[in-house]
Length: 102
Image 1: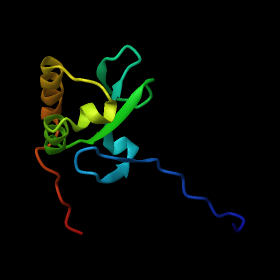
Image 2 (image 1 turned 135 degrees about the vertical axis):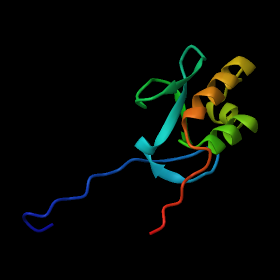
Image 3 (image 1 turned 45 degrees about the horizontal axis):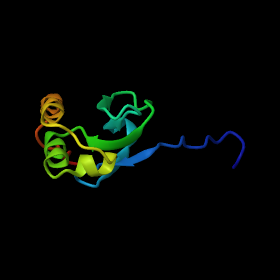
C-alpha cells in the first residue's frame, strides 16, 4: 500500500435467516438465545448466546417466525406469546423492502 492511502474498513456481513440476503451487520436485527434459554432481541448485537439475524423488513420477520426458521437457527422452542411479541416488534419496520432506483 502506498504511503498516504487508507485501507477500507472491514464491514462485518450477516445473512438473514428468512430471505438469505447478506447485508452489513448494522442493517440487521440480531435475535439471541441467552444462556438461560430465553429468546430476546439484541439491538446492539453484543449479548452472549447463540444469535440469528433478520432484515429490518416485516416480511422477513413473518417468514422467519412462520416456518420455524428462527427456532431452527437458535436451536430452541419459541412459545406463542414470545412469537407474538416478536411479530409486534416487527411492525415498526416497513412491510416490504424499498428498492432504490439507481
